[in-house]
Length: 299
Image (tube, rainbow, N blue to C red; front, side, top):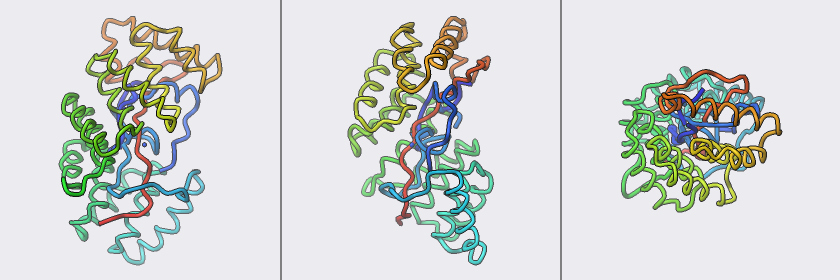
């Protein structure tokens, strides 16, 4: 269904954890207003993925079994000492990557009580609040997870995805522009911005921004599928299907386009895109782009 990141942001989750394994039909379209990240998404599903620390890790887990091993390892350390900051950070990250969102939130909520000035933990907590649908709280926490003298584009992208989910698209777009000043050309931010523009019905500008994201060369297939969505919303189904075939079989791409045609022909198509409409057999679920999962928490 069309929910959070027409594939909207990212990112709180801020926010593109390992990429969630989507079936190809599901990969088709991603609008993550219900779930961010770039924040979702280019990492674990959901809002823009953000934890407040800088940089990604080439060695972070990628498969579900890897994340389960991480959860087991850090969970034992956390149980031995719940006030261990790194144990809380990495255990919650693994839980979230396994879609155990309520448990991840409980871990982080406890951690920020002990380490209230730790921006990495605040960022992770804000992202987790968004995962659990507590958007107003997520917005407030993420605003405290960075400062002008220590800006973090992942946090900003996560904030943007939360603003989009709250329906505050103009504010979201301002936040994405601020993030782009820190990380020019970052495809996760551009993807979230493009879908935010689409939700504002600024389709030509949304297309321009999404083409820039795709051309960056580092984009996730889900970023291309956001462009598929925007082309379809403009009635350019031939172009959309050609692009969809880069990541889908001909049959899957055809199913995606057929669903788009049915959706845009409805008088309430824009509302469907925001809240979800009839679910096609080849489910087209927009996914927000998410920032890379940081490996090291930074205070």
